[in-house]
Length: 479
Image 1 (cartoon, one colour):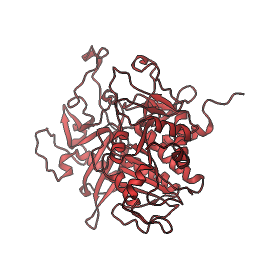
Image 2 (cartoon, one colour):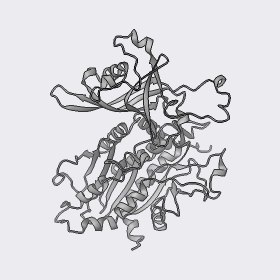
Image 3 (tube, one colour):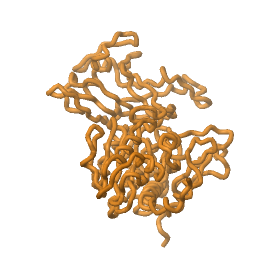
């Protein structure tokens, strides 16, 4: 009897990923989900505002967050000391979405509506006629006068962006056009229903004055009431929030043999999950007794350029690396004035962001010799104009370390090439870098498609990278 196409182990990892992405509708939640996996593997929390001098030990496992939307986790080898190398995997926690405007309360033609902003480069037509929930961060005032961040996830359909009936738009199947400001506004209810509710709302227009300090005046009272009920607080205790929309349809395995993953936010929670599981699996497998640091960095705001305090173009990763190289870690180990620079020269970054699988209906859009397939392993991304940071020593190192099959991708010469965090981090740090990612279809749609096997393949690639980097780095040296 032949073996099943999807092994039980691969399916187990894929199902665990489904739980991860379902619990992570926002970067805030993605970091919380990552922390849960890391703490299960024995990682403990550090804070940027504290001294690390007495906290970090050889053999220790740690994580630190910034803005609770970006995370760096690392384990220190029992032979590591300042100036030695770091094996790094970088990914990002954000995905294209629609975010509530600072003043979101709207009414039109008897409907309650919610004003939203476009975040990132989404395929916005895919957001029409979906059952949408709301999630994010809410700042809640406490009894002692302090403010506490609370995560919100309203996991039921409260919003919808309806399409116009074909009878009123006869050309919709020829070309679906819409205005992102006027046509992408969700409906949330009826004014008549709100007027009969316990908390009435007066119809508003965009020209109404709003008190910037009053959440109740800037947002529909029914929404504020719903949020307060979810968080078990009073409406007046809600000071502000950052909320986005998400598709409430659960992620699932699909295909005749469950060879596909149908889900939101594969880009880039797919690679973020593999990074977290890779470093966790390596930590749980045995003692970390080599002379390197294993590190993952999950950044926010990649989809909008990364130039924020918690983005990859910030000082978050450089500061963490520099702090580690200033500490006296190890018996008799002392940092020198060049420990940080020596460390960077001996380090390596795998920039992990999802890649394009070949689309059977649009195969002509792909370079003929570079058509990645689902379920055949991670895709190394290459671009002659340095939109990706990959070069031949980097691919050689990965191929030397890993038993995982690797595919390659370049764009056609007549097609624009995307980019990711690899080039900016390699330029900022001066470290050797490879850009890669698991293949997927429908990138930036509200509902994307990936391969079930690729979750385990990506995880194992990162685990083998962490376990084998020290030996491979000594063999593949380019000054």
